[in-house]
Length: 297
Image (tube, rainbow, N blue to C red; front, side, top):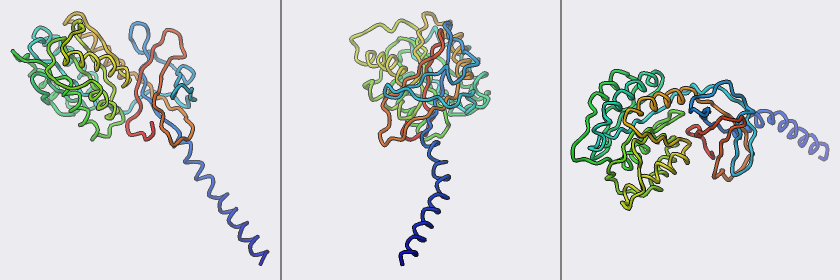
């Protein structure tokens, strides 16, 4: 009887040993996380040729090991939110020129939507990589007299739509003036919606966006400032209408040159609350967002 028990125990141990490689082979992948990161020089241009030692990743203050770095080639969902309110009258023409060039660069391989902001969020073109459809949509952009913009509503609605899509990367690009905001939403609600969509917010604002006592415009400023930082994007302030053309061209170069950075993290039942990205190379700044669909990221 004792001998039979020993043989049974030995058989169980052997079976466990044979199974172990497949179990352990799955665990490292479970503990890996992916970020899509922009690395820029002091002129805001992409920096090429970076390796694992050039990226510093921290979760809740703890540095993580960077395992692999490659060029990001995964497709992007790009939502272009365009201010066509009354305050954008003088900016519409350069906006059109900048958008056409941006679409020509980014439409191949990616999905782009064009959404207007005057009075209410209006989808001019749904997500597509058809350059002609998008360019035709840009041609229909005109400023609406006696109208204000609805940026905050558009951000929430766009984010809700992106949550139903499965593209690995998502970017929301508002292009707006500092005119009147008609949306009555709180900034935390809007930022949380963008974060739940796992989208990076890159905002191009034409004008000064002064601090104001108006609740709508104050909440908009919070979104433009905090929302871009918290989602791995950036806020770009433009002082003239014509500056939107080179700004969109630079953003297209940045998005086309992002890095895919894979790092390791310890097994934990509690997801990290804050992921920080920094550069290990002098003169290089970085920002980025997690790959979409990751659990516990």
